[in-house]
Length: 347
Image 1 (cartoon, rainbow, N blue to C red):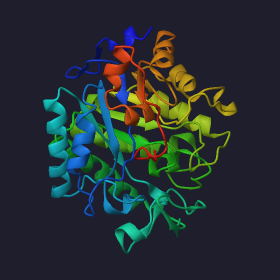
Image 2 (spheres, rainbow, N blue to C red):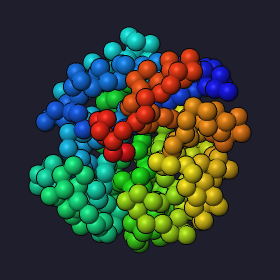
Image 3 (spheres, helix red, strand yellow):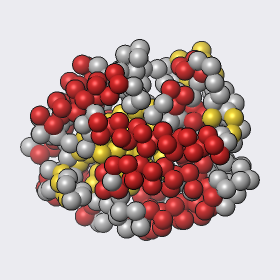
Image 4 (cartoon, helix red, strand yellow):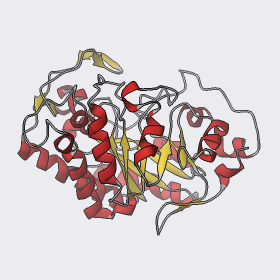
């Protein structure tokens, strides 16, 4: 039943995946105090290099994008060199790897980057405390100015260029799960009255500017985007959100990206304003390669692909518990069950 997972998939003119299983991006918090990737991280990724494509843990594009401890960056020479060791090791093992580019927006905390404001689409905060550092509560952000938004676009593009210098095969822009780009895409976080708010076209502008700037830097076929049209994590839902994503997805159809990746932890969830599952909603509009994720097994993922719900499937927690996941599934061997103590992932 899972044989279709182990057929090659041509992602673009230069990258063909050996199978249709992706390693989902899973925040590990294993970088050192300078946010430089470590030898432990190199071993972690290399053990999973037989996955069709590894998507790295979310990697911050600049200091004020940090909201979790010891998350790696891609904005210093040391960080680039650290990632280079990882990509070289993965490639030597026959694998392919994309860097996930991240700015957490209003989820950031000055504890990590010192002086400076927490930036978001609007000055609307969230309740709660920083994961793994519960003594820190979230700060009320400041709405980014148009000049600051322009600089953020530049910084995403530079991070993509840095990723290529570090040896990555491409990048996935993290535009999902309540982080910075996603904060512009939902009415609950975006109440701007300038060219970045108020209408679907305006609210999608920042995401499209980032996609276009990154594509101009490294080529559109090496660029992917993760999206959460269904608001549920660090974000309140709003019925008008659908119009924003209707517009955004149609615009993405003309960009010839590597893929769009659904940002959801459980794709069995349904959203009334999307008419059902987030993945089915995206599939109904987006015509390019689509990556499904969110609680799938090899069997259910293969069936979803056979039903044309998406083209590739990303596996998260089972990949943590089973570094040899591909071997076990291919040979119909029992998987080790994931437990919360297994280097617990955040996103």
